[in-house]
Length: 217
Image (tube, rainbow, N blue to C red; front, top):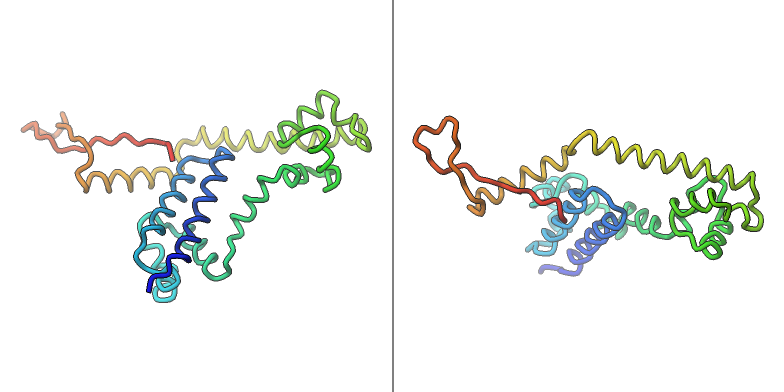
């Protein structure tokens, strides 16, 4: 008998990861991958535990929209009831924990920065360090504020550089595979308009599918 509760729990976790990644401005194709996997699990007419037990990870990978990474995550959820990646992402949403990621800021100082300066992000912390608000906070001072400022600047520079390099390097392999998969699915289903290619088509036959890919999740 199908146990929808287990499949529902896995699908809910997959959607939650997608939602968090969207809030963080992550790659839209990565977000889309988790949401499509969640849809697959939601409409699955089989128990995930049974599939895993009978065929292992490969049985999960054979499902539509489930790659090896997501299949491994599903196996982790089924085995432990938890998903380490999701827990890390949940923690990243906590502004106090985010502030603690900066060297020199412990739990108490992070809480005070959040409560007294109303800062929730590293960008906000960087601004407070530059405009003098951070050093005026009791127990911080100029030297400590300068050290924190340099650390935050380096952290944000790495993030900005990573984003820039990703843009410069063009689409990822994951993105290209996602485009290819959706093109093949829609083409096979006859859902795409067709045109007559100009080259190597002496009879002017209309047969080539036209596909416009949307980056939205």
